[in-house]
Image (cartoon, rainbow, N blue to C red):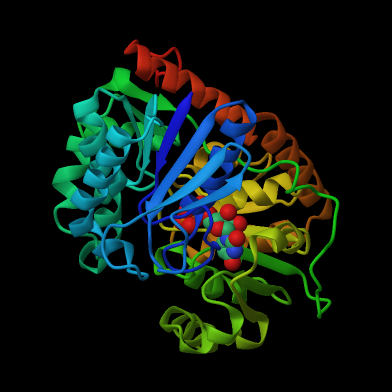
Length: 405
Ligand code: UDP
Protein backbone atom coordinates (compact mmCIF):
# COMPACT_ATOMS: atom_id res chain seq x y z
CA UNK A 1 0.00 0.00 0.00
CA UNK A 2 0.96 3.61 -0.40
CA UNK A 3 0.67 4.99 3.12
CA UNK A 4 0.80 8.70 4.00
CA UNK A 5 1.69 9.40 7.63
CA UNK A 6 0.81 12.90 8.80
CA UNK A 7 2.75 14.06 11.85
CA UNK A 8 2.52 17.84 11.88
CA UNK A 9 4.85 18.65 14.82
CA UNK A 10 6.67 15.38 15.43
CA UNK A 11 9.23 14.62 12.75
CA UNK A 12 10.62 11.09 12.69
CA UNK A 13 13.99 12.71 11.97
CA UNK A 14 14.02 14.86 15.15
CA UNK A 15 15.90 13.78 18.28
CA UNK A 16 13.46 12.85 21.07
CA UNK A 17 13.83 14.30 24.57
CA UNK A 18 13.01 18.00 24.03
CA UNK A 19 9.76 19.58 25.22
CA UNK A 20 7.72 18.71 22.12
CA UNK A 21 9.75 15.76 20.83
CA UNK A 22 9.21 12.36 22.41
CA UNK A 23 7.04 9.32 21.95
CA UNK A 24 5.23 10.49 18.82
CA UNK A 25 8.51 11.06 16.99
CA UNK A 26 9.75 7.59 17.97
CA UNK A 27 6.38 6.03 17.12
CA UNK A 28 6.13 7.54 13.64
CA UNK A 29 9.75 6.65 12.81
CA UNK A 30 9.55 3.05 14.01
CA UNK A 31 6.08 2.34 12.65
CA UNK A 32 6.99 3.73 9.23
CA UNK A 33 10.16 1.62 9.14
CA UNK A 34 8.24 -1.53 10.14
CA UNK A 35 5.57 -0.92 7.47
CA UNK A 36 8.29 -0.39 4.86
CA UNK A 37 9.92 -3.66 5.95
CA UNK A 38 6.56 -5.33 5.24
CA UNK A 39 6.79 -3.99 1.68
CA UNK A 40 4.68 -0.83 1.94
CA UNK A 41 5.60 2.52 0.44
CA UNK A 42 5.49 5.17 3.21
CA UNK A 43 5.66 8.95 3.06
CA UNK A 44 5.74 10.93 6.29
CA UNK A 45 4.52 14.53 6.03
CA UNK A 46 5.74 16.86 8.78
CA UNK A 47 5.82 20.65 9.07
CA UNK A 48 8.96 22.31 7.74
CA UNK A 49 10.44 23.91 10.89
CA UNK A 50 13.76 25.04 9.45
CA UNK A 51 14.78 26.40 6.06
CA UNK A 52 17.78 24.07 6.19
CA UNK A 53 15.74 20.93 5.44
CA UNK A 54 15.39 19.77 1.82
CA UNK A 55 11.75 19.21 0.75
CA UNK A 56 12.17 15.42 0.83
CA UNK A 57 14.59 13.29 2.83
CA UNK A 58 14.82 9.51 2.44
CA UNK A 59 14.77 8.10 5.98
CA UNK A 60 15.37 4.52 4.87
CA UNK A 61 14.41 2.24 2.03
CA UNK A 62 10.64 2.67 1.57
CA UNK A 63 10.25 5.73 3.84
CA UNK A 64 10.48 9.33 2.62
CA UNK A 65 9.99 12.32 4.94
CA UNK A 66 8.39 15.33 3.23
CA UNK A 67 8.74 18.78 4.86
CA UNK A 68 5.48 20.65 4.33
CA UNK A 69 5.64 24.45 3.96
CA UNK A 70 2.91 25.55 6.40
CA UNK A 71 3.69 28.49 8.66
CA UNK A 72 7.14 29.96 9.28
CA UNK A 73 10.17 27.75 8.63
CA UNK A 74 11.26 27.78 12.25
CA UNK A 75 10.54 25.79 15.40
CA UNK A 76 7.22 26.67 17.05
CA UNK A 77 5.56 25.12 20.10
CA UNK A 78 3.03 22.52 18.98
CA UNK A 79 0.23 24.44 20.70
CA UNK A 80 0.87 27.34 18.27
CA UNK A 81 0.40 25.27 15.10
CA UNK A 82 -3.39 25.20 14.73
CA UNK A 83 -3.58 28.32 12.48
CA UNK A 84 -1.31 26.60 9.94
CA UNK A 85 -3.29 23.38 9.63
CA UNK A 86 -5.58 24.64 6.80
CA UNK A 87 -2.46 25.47 4.74
CA UNK A 88 -0.95 22.11 5.64
CA UNK A 89 -4.11 20.32 4.43
CA UNK A 90 -4.41 22.39 1.24
CA UNK A 91 -0.76 21.77 0.39
CA UNK A 92 -1.23 18.01 0.82
CA UNK A 93 -4.38 18.04 -1.31
CA UNK A 94 -2.64 19.96 -4.11
CA UNK A 95 0.33 17.61 -3.90
CA UNK A 96 -1.81 14.49 -4.22
CA UNK A 97 -3.80 16.04 -7.09
CA UNK A 98 -0.63 16.80 -9.06
CA UNK A 99 1.64 13.90 -8.13
CA UNK A 100 1.19 10.34 -9.42
CA UNK A 101 1.94 9.27 -5.82
CA UNK A 102 -1.52 9.36 -4.23
CA UNK A 103 -1.90 7.45 -0.96
CA UNK A 104 -4.20 4.47 -0.53
CA UNK A 105 -4.63 5.42 3.11
CA UNK A 106 -3.74 8.42 5.27
CA UNK A 107 -2.75 7.85 8.89
CA UNK A 108 -2.87 11.03 11.00
CA UNK A 109 -0.92 11.32 14.27
CA UNK A 110 -2.19 13.85 16.87
CA UNK A 111 -5.41 15.78 16.54
CA UNK A 112 -4.08 18.65 14.41
CA UNK A 113 -2.70 16.22 11.84
CA UNK A 114 -6.23 14.79 11.70
CA UNK A 115 -7.56 18.18 10.60
CA UNK A 116 -4.99 18.45 7.80
CA UNK A 117 -5.56 14.83 6.78
CA UNK A 118 -9.35 15.22 6.53
CA UNK A 119 -8.99 18.45 4.54
CA UNK A 120 -6.72 16.76 2.01
CA UNK A 121 -8.09 13.22 1.89
CA UNK A 122 -11.82 13.77 2.42
CA UNK A 123 -12.63 15.27 -1.01
CA UNK A 124 -10.56 12.57 -2.75
CA UNK A 125 -12.27 9.67 -1.00
CA UNK A 126 -9.00 8.49 0.56
CA UNK A 127 -9.62 6.76 3.91
CA UNK A 128 -8.24 8.44 7.03
CA UNK A 129 -7.02 6.57 10.11
CA UNK A 130 -6.57 8.70 13.25
CA UNK A 131 -4.24 8.09 16.22
CA UNK A 132 -4.52 10.83 18.84
CA UNK A 133 -1.41 10.02 20.93
CA UNK A 134 -2.98 12.31 23.56
CA UNK A 135 -6.51 13.56 24.16
CA UNK A 136 -7.37 17.16 24.99
CA UNK A 137 -10.11 16.13 27.44
CA UNK A 138 -7.63 14.05 29.45
CA UNK A 139 -5.00 16.79 29.37
CA UNK A 140 -7.55 19.39 30.52
CA UNK A 141 -8.73 17.10 33.34
CA UNK A 142 -5.21 16.78 34.71
CA UNK A 143 -3.63 20.11 33.86
CA UNK A 144 -6.60 22.46 34.28
CA UNK A 145 -5.65 26.09 33.63
CA UNK A 146 -2.02 25.10 32.98
CA UNK A 147 -3.12 23.40 29.73
CA UNK A 148 -1.80 25.54 26.86
CA UNK A 149 -3.70 23.67 24.10
CA UNK A 150 -5.80 25.84 21.76
CA UNK A 151 -9.27 26.09 23.38
CA UNK A 152 -10.88 24.72 20.20
CA UNK A 153 -9.13 21.39 20.70
CA UNK A 154 -11.89 20.15 23.03
CA UNK A 155 -14.60 20.67 20.37
CA UNK A 156 -12.54 19.65 17.34
CA UNK A 157 -11.08 16.39 18.64
CA UNK A 158 -14.36 14.43 18.84
CA UNK A 159 -15.40 15.71 15.41
CA UNK A 160 -12.18 14.36 13.91
CA UNK A 161 -12.85 11.00 15.57
CA UNK A 162 -16.40 10.84 14.25
CA UNK A 163 -15.31 11.75 10.71
CA UNK A 164 -12.23 9.54 10.36
CA UNK A 165 -12.75 6.07 8.91
CA UNK A 166 -10.91 4.38 11.77
CA UNK A 167 -9.56 5.60 15.12
CA UNK A 168 -6.65 3.77 16.69
CA UNK A 169 -6.59 3.61 20.49
CA UNK A 170 -3.23 2.74 21.99
CA UNK A 171 -4.52 1.29 25.25
CA UNK A 172 -7.74 -0.01 26.79
CA UNK A 173 -8.16 3.15 28.87
CA UNK A 174 -8.15 5.27 25.68
CA UNK A 175 -10.94 3.13 24.20
CA UNK A 176 -13.14 4.24 27.11
CA UNK A 177 -12.15 7.89 26.63
CA UNK A 178 -12.99 7.71 22.90
CA UNK A 179 -16.38 6.14 23.56
CA UNK A 180 -17.10 8.99 25.99
CA UNK A 181 -16.33 11.36 23.09
CA UNK A 182 -19.00 9.56 21.05
CA UNK A 183 -16.55 8.04 18.60
CA UNK A 184 -18.47 5.02 17.22
CA UNK A 185 -17.22 1.90 18.97
CA UNK A 186 -17.13 -0.19 15.79
CA UNK A 187 -14.64 2.22 14.24
CA UNK A 188 -12.18 2.03 17.16
CA UNK A 189 -9.29 -0.41 16.84
CA UNK A 190 -7.00 -1.13 19.77
CA UNK A 191 -3.40 -1.31 18.52
CA UNK A 192 -0.65 -0.78 21.08
CA UNK A 193 2.58 0.98 20.21
CA UNK A 194 5.81 -1.03 20.15
CA UNK A 195 9.47 -1.21 21.03
CA UNK A 196 12.53 -2.04 18.93
CA UNK A 197 13.24 -5.46 20.42
CA UNK A 198 16.45 -5.84 18.41
CA UNK A 199 17.96 -2.68 19.93
CA UNK A 200 16.43 -2.66 23.42
CA UNK A 201 17.91 -5.90 24.81
CA UNK A 202 19.23 -7.00 28.21
CA UNK A 203 22.75 -7.57 26.85
CA UNK A 204 24.96 -4.82 25.42
CA UNK A 205 26.88 -1.70 26.47
CA UNK A 206 26.00 -0.23 29.88
CA UNK A 207 26.16 3.52 30.64
CA UNK A 208 28.76 4.46 33.25
CA UNK A 209 27.75 4.52 36.89
CA UNK A 210 30.11 6.78 38.78
CA UNK A 211 28.79 5.77 42.23
CA UNK A 212 28.04 2.44 43.92
CA UNK A 213 24.52 3.62 44.81
CA UNK A 214 21.49 1.67 43.60
CA UNK A 215 20.18 3.46 40.51
CA UNK A 216 16.56 4.46 39.87
CA UNK A 217 16.24 5.74 36.30
CA UNK A 218 13.35 7.72 34.84
CA UNK A 219 13.19 8.87 31.22
CA UNK A 220 11.08 11.46 29.42
CA UNK A 221 10.47 14.99 28.28
CA UNK A 222 11.01 17.43 31.15
CA UNK A 223 7.38 18.41 31.60
CA UNK A 224 5.51 18.53 34.90
CA UNK A 225 2.98 15.84 34.05
CA UNK A 226 5.74 13.21 33.78
CA UNK A 227 5.78 13.20 37.61
CA UNK A 228 9.54 13.46 38.09
CA UNK A 229 8.94 15.62 41.16
CA UNK A 230 6.91 12.81 42.77
CA UNK A 231 9.89 10.53 42.20
CA UNK A 232 12.23 13.03 43.89
CA UNK A 233 9.78 13.40 46.79
CA UNK A 234 9.81 9.59 47.15
CA UNK A 235 13.60 9.43 47.41
CA UNK A 236 13.86 10.15 51.18
CA UNK A 237 11.96 6.84 51.63
CA UNK A 238 14.61 4.97 49.63
CA UNK A 239 17.84 5.49 51.57
CA UNK A 240 21.08 5.21 49.67
CA UNK A 241 19.55 5.10 46.17
CA UNK A 242 20.30 7.62 43.43
CA UNK A 243 17.71 8.98 41.03
CA UNK A 244 18.79 9.73 37.47
CA UNK A 245 16.40 11.56 35.13
CA UNK A 246 17.18 11.41 31.40
CA UNK A 247 15.46 13.86 29.07
CA UNK A 248 14.99 17.56 28.45
CA UNK A 249 17.39 19.86 26.64
CA UNK A 250 20.99 18.76 26.03
CA UNK A 251 23.06 18.68 29.28
CA UNK A 252 24.81 22.02 28.67
CA UNK A 253 21.45 23.81 28.24
CA UNK A 254 19.84 22.35 31.38
CA UNK A 255 20.85 25.31 33.54
CA UNK A 256 18.41 27.56 31.63
CA UNK A 257 15.51 25.10 31.69
CA UNK A 258 12.70 26.15 34.05
CA UNK A 259 11.45 22.62 34.76
CA UNK A 260 15.00 21.42 35.49
CA UNK A 261 15.41 24.28 37.98
CA UNK A 262 12.08 23.41 39.62
CA UNK A 263 13.07 19.74 39.99
CA UNK A 264 16.43 20.67 41.55
CA UNK A 265 14.58 22.95 44.01
CA UNK A 266 12.31 20.06 44.97
CA UNK A 267 15.39 17.85 45.47
CA UNK A 268 17.01 20.49 47.72
CA UNK A 269 13.84 20.98 49.77
CA UNK A 270 13.58 17.18 50.29
CA UNK A 271 17.23 16.97 51.36
CA UNK A 272 18.17 14.64 48.47
CA UNK A 273 20.01 17.05 46.13
CA UNK A 274 23.18 14.90 46.36
CA UNK A 275 21.24 11.84 45.13
CA UNK A 276 19.45 13.39 42.13
CA UNK A 277 21.09 13.77 38.71
CA UNK A 278 19.50 15.41 35.69
CA UNK A 279 21.27 13.90 32.70
CA UNK A 280 19.58 16.03 30.02
CA UNK A 281 18.77 14.70 26.58
CA UNK A 282 20.18 11.27 25.77
CA UNK A 283 20.61 10.28 22.12
CA UNK A 284 18.06 7.64 21.10
CA UNK A 285 20.94 5.32 20.13
CA UNK A 286 22.32 5.47 23.69
CA UNK A 287 19.02 4.80 25.46
CA UNK A 288 19.42 0.99 25.75
CA UNK A 289 22.76 1.46 27.59
CA UNK A 290 21.10 3.87 30.02
CA UNK A 291 18.24 1.47 30.80
CA UNK A 292 20.77 -1.33 31.36
CA UNK A 293 22.59 0.85 33.90
CA UNK A 294 19.47 0.97 36.13
CA UNK A 295 18.50 -1.31 39.01
CA UNK A 296 14.91 -0.21 38.54
CA UNK A 297 13.17 2.08 36.05
CA UNK A 298 10.42 4.36 37.34
CA UNK A 299 7.66 5.82 35.16
CA UNK A 300 5.18 7.79 37.24
CA UNK A 301 3.32 10.27 35.02
CA UNK A 302 -0.01 11.82 36.04
CA UNK A 303 -1.53 10.31 32.90
CA UNK A 304 -0.07 8.54 29.86
CA UNK A 305 -1.72 7.68 26.53
CA UNK A 306 0.76 4.87 25.93
CA UNK A 307 4.21 5.37 27.49
CA UNK A 308 7.16 3.97 25.56
CA UNK A 309 9.78 4.29 28.28
CA UNK A 310 8.59 1.51 30.65
CA UNK A 311 8.28 -0.79 27.65
CA UNK A 312 11.82 0.05 26.54
CA UNK A 313 13.00 -0.71 30.08
CA UNK A 314 11.16 -4.05 30.06
CA UNK A 315 12.70 -4.97 26.70
CA UNK A 316 16.10 -4.33 28.34
CA UNK A 317 15.18 -6.76 31.11
CA UNK A 318 14.77 -4.11 33.78
CA UNK A 319 12.09 -4.16 36.51
CA UNK A 320 9.66 -1.25 36.41
CA UNK A 321 7.72 0.74 38.98
CA UNK A 322 4.96 2.58 37.14
CA UNK A 323 1.93 4.70 37.89
CA UNK A 324 -1.34 2.84 37.30
CA UNK A 325 -2.52 5.12 34.48
CA UNK A 326 -3.36 4.81 30.77
CA UNK A 327 -1.15 2.55 28.70
CA UNK A 328 1.04 1.60 31.67
CA UNK A 329 -1.87 -0.47 33.02
CA UNK A 330 -1.68 -2.60 29.85
CA UNK A 331 2.08 -2.93 29.41
CA UNK A 332 3.22 -3.37 33.03
CA UNK A 333 1.73 -6.46 34.69
CA UNK A 334 1.50 -5.74 38.41
CA UNK A 335 3.49 -8.26 40.44
CA UNK A 336 4.85 -9.94 37.28
CA UNK A 337 6.92 -7.43 35.27
CA UNK A 338 6.85 -4.60 37.80
CA UNK A 339 4.84 -2.81 40.45
CA UNK A 340 1.95 -0.45 39.73
CA UNK A 341 1.45 2.37 42.22
CA UNK A 342 -1.21 5.11 42.42
CA UNK A 343 -0.26 8.24 40.44
CA UNK A 344 0.93 11.37 42.30
CA UNK A 345 1.59 9.42 45.47
CA UNK A 346 5.28 9.70 46.56
CA UNK A 347 4.64 7.65 49.70
CA UNK A 348 3.40 4.54 47.82
CA UNK A 349 6.10 5.05 45.21
CA UNK A 350 8.84 5.27 47.85
CA UNK A 351 7.57 2.11 49.57
CA UNK A 352 7.48 0.17 46.26
CA UNK A 353 10.98 1.31 45.28
CA UNK A 354 12.45 0.48 48.69
CA UNK A 355 10.91 -2.97 48.66
CA UNK A 356 12.06 -3.73 45.11
CA UNK A 357 15.60 -2.44 45.61
CA UNK A 358 15.85 -4.66 48.70
CA UNK A 359 14.74 -7.80 46.84
CA UNK A 360 17.30 -9.00 44.27
CA UNK A 361 15.27 -12.06 43.27
CA UNK A 362 12.10 -10.07 42.61
CA UNK A 363 14.01 -7.59 40.43
CA UNK A 364 15.51 -10.43 38.44
CA UNK A 365 12.18 -12.19 37.86
CA UNK A 366 10.38 -8.93 36.98
CA UNK A 367 13.16 -8.11 34.51
CA UNK A 368 13.04 -11.53 32.85
CA UNK A 369 9.23 -11.49 32.62
CA UNK A 370 9.26 -7.91 31.26
CA UNK A 371 11.78 -8.83 28.58
CA UNK A 372 9.66 -11.78 27.48
CA UNK A 373 6.46 -9.73 27.45
CA UNK A 374 8.01 -6.93 25.38
CA UNK A 375 9.45 -9.40 22.88
CA UNK A 376 6.30 -11.48 22.51
CA UNK A 377 3.66 -8.75 22.45
CA UNK A 378 5.14 -5.40 21.61
CA UNK A 379 7.46 -5.66 18.61
CA UNK A 380 6.98 -2.95 15.96
CA UNK A 381 6.42 -5.72 13.45
CA UNK A 382 3.37 -6.81 15.44
CA UNK A 383 2.10 -3.21 15.64
CA UNK A 384 2.62 -2.79 11.88
CA UNK A 385 0.81 -6.04 11.08
CA UNK A 386 -2.16 -5.05 13.24
CA UNK A 387 -2.28 -1.67 11.50
CA UNK A 388 -2.21 -3.37 8.10
CA UNK A 389 -5.53 -4.94 9.11
CA UNK A 390 -6.90 -1.56 10.18
CA UNK A 391 -5.78 0.08 6.90
CA UNK A 392 -7.34 -2.75 4.89
CA UNK A 393 -10.60 -2.37 6.82
CA UNK A 394 -10.61 1.41 6.35
CA UNK A 395 -9.97 0.98 2.63
CA UNK A 396 -12.69 -1.62 2.25
CA UNK A 397 -14.96 0.25 4.71
CA UNK A 398 -15.63 -2.95 6.57
CA UNK A 399 -15.53 -3.49 10.32
CA UNK A 400 -12.12 -4.75 11.42
CA UNK A 401 -11.88 -7.92 13.44
CA UNK A 402 -9.61 -6.13 15.90
CA UNK A 403 -12.24 -3.68 17.12
CA UNK A 404 -12.33 -2.99 20.80
CA UNK A 405 -14.59 -5.43 22.51
N1 UDP B 1 13.81 9.69 24.67
C1 UDP B 1 15.10 9.80 24.15
N2 UDP B 1 16.00 10.62 24.78
C2 UDP B 1 15.69 11.33 25.90
C3 UDP B 1 14.37 11.21 26.43
C4 UDP B 1 13.45 10.39 25.78
O1 UDP B 1 15.43 9.16 23.14
O2 UDP B 1 16.55 12.04 26.40
C5 UDP B 1 12.82 8.81 23.99
C6 UDP B 1 12.46 7.57 24.80
O3 UDP B 1 13.43 6.55 24.67
C7 UDP B 1 11.09 7.23 24.20
C8 UDP B 1 10.49 8.61 23.88
O4 UDP B 1 11.60 9.52 23.82
O5 UDP B 1 11.25 6.49 22.99
C9 UDP B 1 9.49 9.06 24.95
O6 UDP B 1 8.28 8.42 24.74
P1 UDP B 1 7.12 8.28 25.83
O7 UDP B 1 6.00 7.53 25.19
O8 UDP B 1 7.65 7.68 27.09
O9 UDP B 1 6.69 9.77 26.20
P2 UDP B 1 6.04 10.98 25.33
O10 UDP B 1 7.17 11.79 24.82
O11 UDP B 1 5.22 10.36 24.22
O12 UDP B 1 5.19 11.73 26.30
